[in-house]
Image (cartoon, rainbow, N blue to C red; front, side):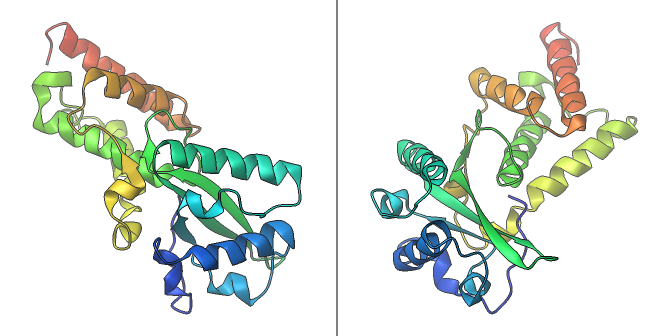
Length: 224
């Protein structure tokens, strides 16, 4: 998610996953059933919050078949991983209306990376980079040439910046509610990371993917 700081006037109860059932249902019915996208109700909603998928499952929330398909898929995937539905509030400032976007959390490698889970992905990528720095014998140190390679330095700075934007949410939610990965980084997890990185829609990510392959390939041949 590109998470922003929410105004102080929001209803803080939205952040309480164990207590926000009524708030979430009211919001979803207002948006998906009544098709309302303006009003004070949206002003009270934070830019992002989590909801237990069990709260939404089976509830009469939609009138449009397309909305129902999206919502049902999101609920099903969240329940499969025993996670949450992430609700992002967006606003068109010129036309002054809101819309909701949904994602499944915790983020896991293999998920498609979108604007709504980008911070989570880059947090995981940052963790892997730090792992290679601390354990260079495993895959090679991704940061080893940072002082001599300006492009690498810029990419690492951007990765840290995008991953660091998750910090605002970490003041509200435990990390395991937002991301799930194997911090020991077995090769199967690394392969999933590489494929997720390659499929990222930011063009420089493909360059960084190639750099990871280069470092790991050099390590595999006894280099580094």
